Structures are given as C-alpha cells and as structure tokens.
Image (cartoon, rainbow, N blue to C red):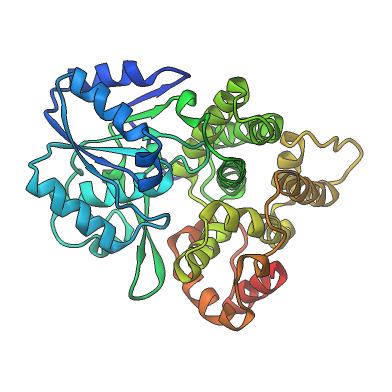
Length: 383
C-alpha cells in the first residue's frame, strides 16, 4: 500500500461571470499590490485593463508584466521577478492560459525561495511556499491555473523544464467562461485537445487512483460532448462552460496522477521549435496510446466509452484501437494538423528530441516504459 496525496488550490471558482466575485475574495485576503502576469495579445484586447479596473475598484493596486511568451522562458521569469521586486508587489495574478500561469508560478516561486527558476527543475525542489498566486484563466485546456506543474523553457538548452512542486499551487483559481468567449477557433481546439491529453494520460498513468479516474473519465466525456461545438461557435456559453469544467477535471486528474510520454515528448517539441503545446499533444496522443495499448488496453477501452464509442462486443484490444481512432477523429474534426512534419519538426532532430524526452519527469508514470529507440520510433510515426 502507498500513500496518495491529492493536490488542488484551496479555493476554486467556476462559472460565467465569476470574475467579479473572485475579486471580492481577493480583497478579503488583504493583498495590497498585485503583479499581473499576462501576455501582449490579452493586453491589446483590453482584458488586462478590465481586470486591473476591477482590482482598482476593490482598492488593490497593480503592476502589469505582459512580456510572457507563448512558451515562457527563464528570461521571462527573471524580467517579471525584477518588476515584482521593484514595485514591492505582495502577490501575483496570472491572467491568460498556460503560458502566463507558468511564468507567474516561476516568478512567485523565485520571489520567496531565491535563486533562478532552473534551480527548481524536477519534483519538489523548493523549500518555501511561493508568493500567493491568484490564477485567472482565459482558456479551457492547460489547467495550469490549478496545478502544481510549471513548465519553463531554458533558452540556452532549448529544453522545456518540468517543475513539479507542491509550492507552486495557486491559492485561488478562477474559470470565468465569459473570458473564454473570444478565444479563436485554433486556440480553442488546441487547448481542448490539451485537456483531453491530460485526462487520457492521467487515466492510464501508473499513479492513477479512484479519485483521479473519476475526474479523468468525466473530463473525457465532457470534451467528447462539447469541444466540437466550442470550436464551431465560440459564443456558445454552454459549450464554453462545460469545457471549463472539463479542463479543470482533467487538471485534477493529472495534477495527482501525473502524465506520460505524450507530455514528455511534446515538451521537447515546444522547447526545440517553439511550437504550441496543445497542438503537439494532440498530434502525439494517438501515437503514444498505440504504444501503450499493449499494456493498457482495458484502460483505453474505458477511454473509448467515455469518447462515446459503442464498444459492445469488442474485446479490450479492439476497444483500445477504437479509442485511438476516436481521438484521431476528434482531432481532425477540430482541424488539428495531421502530423509533426506539418508543424515544421525535422526527422534529423529525432534522436536529440527523444534523448531529452527520456529525462522529462512526465514520462515516469507512463504505463509502458520505453527505451530511447522506442521513443524515437514514436516520434518517427508521428512525422
């Protein structure tokens, strides 16, 4: 028997229009000045001004760092940390999707622990809780607003560092579907497939528990029922809100059961080529599960049923293949590129990508261990 710990922020708010209520909660915590970590597109769209205005009305001052890149870097963390220290901010707000959330976690962790964010690569390397972090989500996919995962790109090594640390868990997560209504179709699709990957990898993980299983399966069902509509009609608030719940449930699953080779491999693609994480996951997901099917067929059969596949009369191996086919159909239906070559990945880089993937902490809980040659073969198949 082993001890399982379940990580989640102490407060989580979900629902269209919940942002105003969240600001009241933040005011009640006695914070005085926020560092708002976001990106330039959200700033240009006026989303940052809206949030800063609500904070001002609540008596909370704010400094804005909008330098987060799509794959946040060590440099981004250091720039944001310098602003936080210069402006004497006593807490951090991340506003956006996974990139601002991850960047904010890096800033908040270094603010209290010192050193550089690279010092905390790995599992639970920090000694102190990070500066309080309030994560306001604008996408439905990464679940970074509620997890203990922080992914930062080391520009020098062209590697995405996986920082898995209980101390980077936000104190409050906010999922207001009204903030997600303006997401473009491509981002909606990529983040939705990211959420599906979280749920599937958590469900087949060697660290899965009955709690994470329940979260993962419900997330898969909600994604199967709502992602296509959320992509087709971004103004459909019912579909948007259901996807917000789906990605949060998937986050609950992988935050505690961890992930697998899809993420271990996708991190390398992002670090090497600066590619969108959700798209890399979507392309790799069926290929990695085809590799896993040898040992995880019963689990993948459950995934097939959650994806609304009628598996009556199928043995587990056949149902597992049906799950993989259903993942491919969903990915195609939301216009995910068909392979890694379409994203600009190069076959000659496969050995380096695979070697780095073998070092990624996410691969530890994959249900079928792999040698580097096998990871290389998966990359090749996905090309």
